[in-house]
Amino acid sequence: MTILPHNAPFTRFADWFAEAQASEPNDPNAMALATADADGAPSLRVVLLKAWDERGFVFYTNLTSQKGREIAANPRVHLNFHWKSLQRQVRIGGTAALVIEAEADAYFATRPRESQLGAWASLQSAPLPDRATFEARLADYDRQFPDVVPRPPHWSGWRVMPARIEYWQARDGRWHEREAYLRAGDGWTHGLVYP
Image (spheres, rainbow, N blue to C red):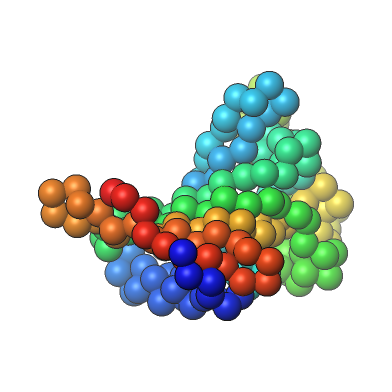
């Protein structure tokens, strides 16, 4: 394997992500997020990438949700982008850490009011007796915050700091191209992986 500088896999991601934004009909920033509970049982759901740079890949959520609790107990997670129109995947394994408060506040302020109110009203992942209960909670918070909606203390972002990034490109005959980057100190090792 070759040792590459710290930005090598992110330069590749920038190129592929730009192509996905130009070609994917819906949510090119959608990524599957895998977590595990205390017994090691995996859980998978789709979240949206909201920021990324050489520090990692950021998504936002309710910290008391199932994924929030699981990440707090075990920060080792895996992400997967699947861009069907390009026949590509990017697999990212790493460790999640909370973004700083100012970063979470800044992103929360950009969200539509309805999404901001939903962050307060939803007891994400908890049982909901009926839709009317949720709608009543939304109305309550709408009255409570007639102007600016502050970020709830239970809502923030996680940054996944990658230890491994794999780029997968489909090829005929299932002879796919796979390239893996593995963190090595301040840089990365890089090599091919059999299809």
